[in-house]
Amino acid sequence: MDREKEMQSWCYLDNAAMTWPKPLRVRQAVADAMVSGGGNPGRGAHKLSMKASVLVYRAREAVAAMFGASPEQVVFLQNTTYALNTAIKGLLHPGDHVLCSDLEHNAVLRPLEKRMREGQGDYTVFPSFACERGQTPEKICAALEARILPQTRMVVCTHASNICSAQMPLAEIGALCKKRGLLFVVDAAQSAGILPIDMKRMQIDALCMPGHKGLYGPAASGILVLRDGLCPRTLVEGGNGVASMEPTMPDTLPEALESGTLPVGAIAGLCEGIACVRELGIEEIGRHERRLSRAMTERLCGIRGVTVYLPWKSGAVVLFNADGIPCEAVAAALDREGIFVRAGYHCSALGHQTLGTAQTGAVRASFGIFNQMRDVERLTDAVRALVRNG
Image (tube, rainbow, N blue to C red; front, side, top):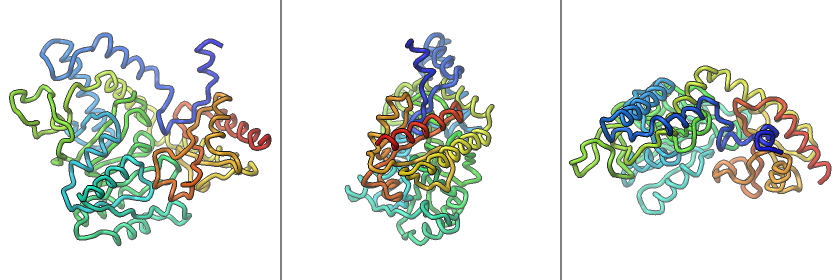
């Protein structure tokens, strides 16, 4: 089987890790940046450098327009993890207390845990009530507010879980943070490009997201968007073409947080990925993925011996296990059939503890714009055969 035919036979259901395939225009933008736009942005006045600078600024404008921010407050970083670390470590001071939800990714948990172990400040986990059918914004906000301490400075919260279809009410949490004078940092790794996000309306102070997931850009196109007037302390210092004779970093964004050469190719692809998402429409993308999620959940729930977690919710992710078969074995069997999912703990210790899968892990199937109902049928048919044959 040649490469093209093999790729056409694949059933890719690991979009929560990396959306694939990338739209043609994204791939073309990356290639064009490498071939005819190879200058270093902000590092010269020649045509190639200026072309790269224009490309980067257009991408800032695209991000700002999508999320309700100023282009100057859009910072390009390696990934969501780096963005979250920048927001957490750059905005907190010794003694500050932090609140985070019980669905957080390790990109939130580990910086908070390290900070606590080094004596810099404690954190408290508040419940998402994700496993309850009666999950409401009021209930979540009441639980959060009950855990606010005099020294609490920040709330860090995922918008959508990376292991299930649970979502957090950003507008309500943002309003509470505003009322109590707390910084509101949002992990939008699983929601950017899939769910509507408006930083001003939701009163978000720092929005962290990847380009390589729901925005359909390449890897290394991470984004940190900050509200006007907010500038975290730097994690990394170096050259960026601004105030080069000064021994310290500039204090204005985005240059204050962008040390070293930017990945122009990745940013070019991100800009086109955002254009694709806007043309398709975030609402339509969300509906498409929820439709596939509901269909897969219904089919898996009909297979004896298969457990689907939070089957009453629908989003871009379905989490399940097959009785008596380790989740890694399920994923390996599916891989042999050309069906690509992810098994294990998905870098989400808190989330798996919340769902009750901390001892076993689970299999995750996640959708993107290129998935169709045939992908749902193919996975569920394969799981049915696997369970039947043991």
